[in-house]
Length: 241
Ligand SMILES: [Zn+2]
Image (cartoon, rainbow, N blue to C red; front, side, top):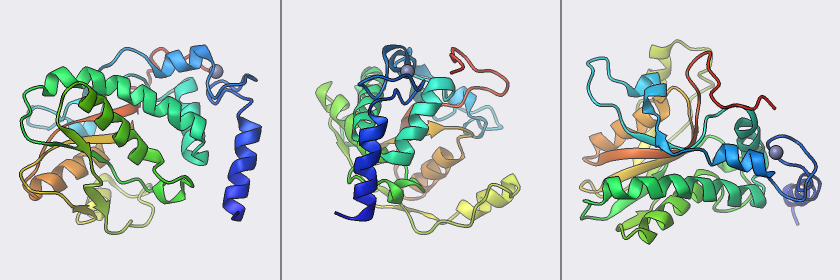
């Protein structure tokens, strides 16, 4: 057993007693109220991501989501991304599958295979369990859509050719320039695509993926995410834990 796996097993034992959202001691990865925060009403939330809203007033990429990235939800997702805890993966995949069920009727007219593609994550390589992270989310979304009768299949259709240096301190235009050319598309050009990600903030990552797919001849129909950062200065429904 590698050192990383040993650490992971120890972390699971220790953390499994605490709710990852509020920290209360429980024999469950999430307590009832924190699970309810993650399973809020499914709605379109692309308007909260400024980069997804074109300056010319054109339609934004639709994004379906059931939670705001704040309070207990934020704690739980951060804990999941840092540890890859299996128990939390189960909660997260269950949550995003519920959002996908709401997308099903919207995409009911799809006739060709819908590719369900996870957005490449900088953290993915750190997640110790195979199939974790956004890959697991995409699988759950594809299963939910298939269960609703849609011809959907998960695919690692997007990949990063490289990650540029930390772009946090760069101006917006520089960050965009740094992303150009970093997304590789690995799917047929005529396939509709549904993107899957964990958290939506500015929308720059989804926009980058959509543009890369468009250059490859694919149409992005929308995205499903676990949580969306609330508009600046607002923390809707956060319990403040
Ligand atoms: Zn809790």
